[in-house]
Every structure is written in structure tokens, then in C-alpha cells.
Length: 252
Image (tube, rainbow, N blue to C red; front, top):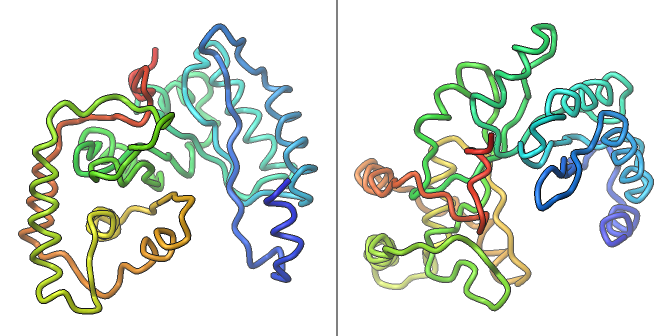
């Protein structure tokens, strides 16, 4: 696969790379939930495809596999004990999903990471204090959802954003931060990513366009003022849009 070829061709020592992977627990669209053993088998298959003995972070992709969630978490704990993964976590899990682990077995560890949709329209105001209290690191995905260019191409489905008034706020900030249009230009995407960084979140900006990948990494030539941080915080509607059919945080 492409990633395995890139790792091999990079010439970078494996210890200098940080590789994250996920297992899909299934449990929706009529698919059966993966069992404990199936989760372990899926990981070993991925390791073979990647050409590595371990991944640095391994996540359960979502909480829809209600009947097997705890067993799937046990599989990740076992994988960590076997040295197949360095760190383990979840994605799109709410406090209720995470506490289900402890209710089943108090000896099971909390996830080290929870990867959730997080941006000014969806600040996860209720979930964040809980995760911070448990020492669970927060990784933000879909950070660019409020931007006018997000998922505009055919086939890039997401839940609709009916009210786009927030984009006026973003464009006003773009104009102000660009000032005289010097070399330190700031885009909508950079504003949103900088907001996340200043809030202390890890971010996962994604693009297939080289120029956007480069721009998304250029976030240190400006800083959002406290007033602008507060303005962006104030856009919150608890609006998760990345999954077109349901917010996984609300799964049974």
C-alpha cells in the first residue's frame, strides 16, 4: 500500500515516525460488530500491510458497536500489552461510552486519546471538561468544517449547515488579519486551525492539494487575539456535521 511504500522510501528511522491507525468496529448499516479476536486480527493484518511491527496510536473509530464496545477495548488493551501498539484510544466516544468501560471492569484503563469533531461550531463544551479530568488527550478532526471551502466537491457528503452566518465572521477576520495583504496572508483554514492550536488541541487537517497542505502547516506567523478567540468560541452551536447520517457521540 502507499503508506508502506512511503515509509520504506523515506529513509527515516521507524522510531522517528508516529503512525496512527484505526479499526472500524462496524455495528451499523447491518454490519455485525467486530469481536475481540477480530479486532486483534484486523490490527495484525494492518501491521503486515504497513510493513511495521507496531503502530504508535491505535483507535476504535466509533462507538456504534454497542454490544461489543467493551470487548473491543479489551482487544486494544491486549494489543498494547503485546507491543503491537504504543498508545490506544477511541474516536467519537462520549463520556457515557467511556464510563461504560469502567462499569464493566474497573481495572481497564481509560483511553489515552479521544478523537472528536471539534471546531468553533462544535466546541464539545460538555465533553472536554470530562476528558481533561481523566487525562484523555483531545485530537480534533474536521477542524475546517466552518470554512466556505469545506466539502464543496461532489461526493463529499456531510450533514448540512443551514445557517452560514458564521462565514461572515470568518471572512471579516481574514480581512483584518491580512491587513495590507503582505506575505503573512491568513486564510479561513488557517484561522480555524490556529483557533484549535490556541485551545490546546492536536489537529488533523486533511487535503489532497499540495498547496493547501503547505498552507495548513503555516500557522505560526500570527496569533489570534483574546477577543477573536472569544468571538470564535461564541459561534458554538454543538453542531457536528462530519457524519452525514448521525452524530456518533450520540450513539446508544
